[in-house]
Image 1 (cartoon, rainbow, N blue to C red):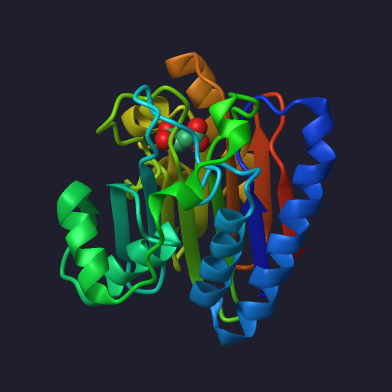
Image 2: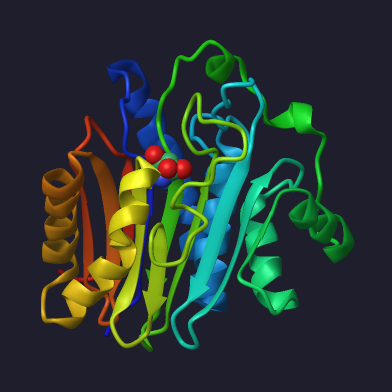
Length: 274
Ligand code: ASP
């Protein structure tokens, strides 16, 4: 058993000239997450995704993509594999770090997913840091220069405790009110200490209909390595939905997997085995 942390910065179309910048950014975020691993895998994925939300290049937190109305609607989720605890928020704009809002839903309510105005009321009342909406808009997104999708992190510690966190703006031009896979347990993310943790990026409508993150968990449970599992799941996304995306995973033993069928997907790995 060995600890591992895997991050992705979104599977999508990444212009060549942004790939180096994205690679450096995700490595910084991996350092932040790995440094927090001493406090446990939930702290590791939270710290990693907080850092990814702060990087304007990625589609989460600051720099999230715009809806067809030119607004931003953040979605985020977290899950803990030891007790299958989960929390998520959808269609919010205000939490400084949407991943913290998802975690607060998990830790402070009896619910799994809060959306829209009710989620915003909860965020204000729960004491998580809020920010002025203007802070999240960047010129690059306004000009449509980046079309990358979603950020996420999966972690396992040396005791086999697994976690996942995900955060996104969805995708450019989505209808206001649209939720994707990212805040949905089983579609965009899953963690189960009996098996491992997994997190997806790509057109959410495909991941939702295939419940693909849960499928990755089941493929690993049936004996595949995380690497084989993410590849098989992406093949399913291609053959059943005709869609592309990316998936990262860790097994409970610290083995790691990541793959994408899109143009590019920034990935960073700390620790782990084959
Ligand atoms: N999965 C996200 C969504 O559909 C965005 C993405 O990763 O493409 O909202």
